Image: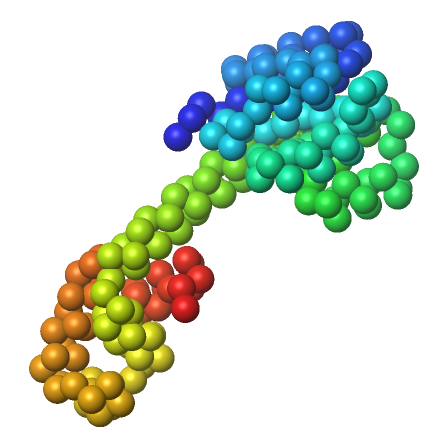
Length: 202
């Protein structure tokens, strides 16, 4: 997992440096950008942490930048920071998926708390994504017949019923079942069900 970093995008140099100093005081890695376009040139989905995004900027404003980040599947938590906040903008940002919305002037302790929460959220989300990817990789190893049997197992269907419906012997069902449990790295049917729910397996 990459190092969690706080990315500050603000065209106001004084606001940018003040926020950078605050984040560094909490011993967190930080990168600053004076325009949204420069940030877009550097960002990719592997970068982790939290984004602090000013709303009023030239070239591309904060809301437009936020939309472009989502289009690129950048899922890092975004905290919208603005000195020109209004209720409509706050609602729009939150509905679009912003992690939080903070109005200037902000309380330093509150800002650091929100940033820490954002980083923790991002780390948890990335761990979950890795777990889903691992489960799907295991599922991709199953043969078509093992996938069929797994669907029955996930619905708590007994081996004799599976055998009858698939037109195979109970011993063959048991073999497929044992193989799929091994490939899925599941010790019990309940664990297999949890995996299916986590990874949204059919």
